[in-house]
Image 1 (cartoon, rainbow, N blue to C red):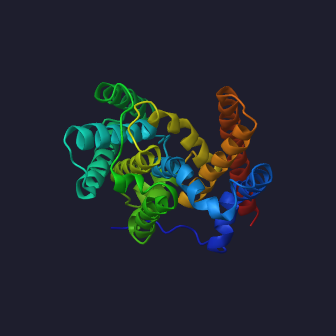
Image 2: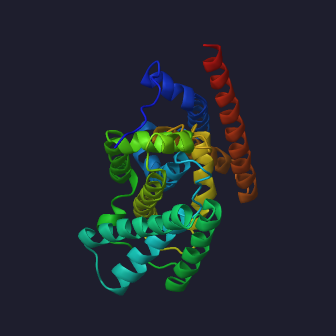
Length: 325
């Protein structure tokens, strides 16, 4: 199978800095502000706990990235409800309802749910050719309704092994996501994904199976959303039908802030993770001043707009530099 080899870059670190430099600088600034405002909470000894608190948001951002990288408006707004649905099924249906607590059952169940939702979205967006935002919005509404049907009110607790994944141990599922992504980067699929996101017509002409690549990107987003659902369940230690959807828009904002082009084909999971950490640190700083949730929503919107504008300016400058060369 033929595939497109990306144009050579000066260095991987230079390319990473070009895509995520703003988010990385913002991370340092926000971390310094938080350390100054609340030194006890952000002391090095507490970083493991902070990672656990940020893990579901980071997981949601990582899950949102693959379909965005695939291009053609591939924004999946059902990532948050998928996390909430996984949370409800694991705790309310399997653990409390069926008495199943083994990780050998609960973890595969979460992953299968995520992959099934991703495959459904991929079928709608790539085979039926429904607009991705419409297809995933429909899935959002269905999952939100089913979750509330299964779980009208919060219940708990979660199994002890699952609650143990909160805090410093949350690095385990996050590492699993990055390990999967690293493995995919060693295969032609990664090059196909970036080529399709950059220019799907050129990729199709070069023999890349555009429809299959995009379908697999949705499946990958679903898989990562299932893992993020596990992290969410570990953090809250129970099941809550309302918390999952709250991650949807801030995860997309984090991806854009991390230098992932919403047009597709540029960026990666490292940038998405840094963008998520930026938003988490911004939340912490604003919460210190007891601002209302409305102010937080304004901040998320401003971040999303600023990130999109910065990405557009960066792409234009890079294109101009390439033309001059």
